[in-house]
Picture 1 (tube, helix red, strand yellow):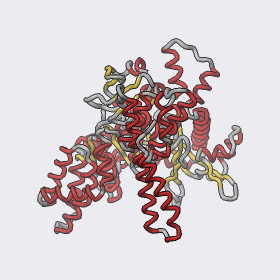
Picture 2 (cartoon, rainbow, N blue to C red):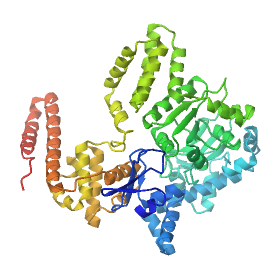
Picture 3 (cartoon, rainbow, N blue to C red):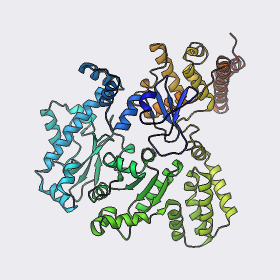
Length: 574
């Protein structure tokens, strides 16, 4: 693992771990760590994580099979054909994903071919200023106006209706009948970062089409909250410049791309999400939000700025003049004029303060409301210096005393402590991907560092003893992996396709743990975990006693006494 990563990252030894600058985002202080023993990497800055196969996939922009072949070639191993298939299938349902990817590829070819037979669809793309080259490069197409065009095409290729439904390309009615999801719509294929089609978006050609835009339903391949349209084409440009332009629509993106602006991406038929933000952070340190200039567009830009604020990125907002969007502006004024506006885009903080001040009526109530409206953004800022500067500017702009602004912020933070905790912990990397107490975290880290202690630990700690659901899930997988393999070397593989779980496991694998007196420390953690569990159960029973009828209290009292006795016995006796 370390040898492979070392070809891309300069690593230095730090205890059991190897440390270097993260290759997935720009940073000055190393936050990227590799556990050579378990073959796992994790970045405490951007939360990118995985094993050696995923690392090569991300760095080279290839699929699992290609990554496997590249690694085999590196070590001089020739892979037989059957072994490649088996290995791919072994990696979390790879065979299923490959089949679904092949089906999507066929669907994209079908829609592209159908475009040629639809003058209406061809005229639509022409009217939007797209060249034949752009249409071909992005595989734009047309879904015919019928109920079974794609289904019939699939049938000729030996693909069942069930598979079409599984892919989100067909819909099954209550009576069991299946029909095409997309009908009389121009089609925009949606791709993963390797350029493989994973879903589609269709724009209705009928004036009364509802909805105007329709996306594939979510599937094994496609989670709409994590896809940025066109990033597979522009990610290298984004990485090179360290700057990404986020636009709202498919046509905004395509017009920019065709005009030579090669560092943009579009929110893919959904509101901007945390997953979008973390995807951006992998490639860029600067973000410019270019949303429509109407009230809805500006509100969307503000929500996106709040989501991006905890990640420490430099975020700007560009409001285009009049009713323009990037598509209309670039067609009329050209790409150079658009780049000129980008250079003058206002930092998100200044933009939001100016927007709030302009919308306030100047009264005390209006200024108070404007300040409250920007508290979520202030709360989301992870850098205290940046936050204090924002509050200074906000107080001056709204003519509010700075001490009063600070008090208003404190009141807001106290009113929503969960968000304040997420803001202060996640960006600083105490454990951005972990949502568990330090007690559970330390317990799991010890078992990863010394798997042989699992035999003793499981005598006293069953998964349900861990009161946090994520910790309980990880511990269960640990026990299953240890029982199967006699160790934890394949712990990450056991996470399957659950990205959140894999990130958490990767982080645990690279966190430092005790090497001396670890058994004694583990006994202490086990005792504390049991006490925590039984205290929680006692609190639950007391809450039930407070509201239950007198006749039902006998069994509850017995449970209360039982939990009390077990709490007293939580100090382990061998």
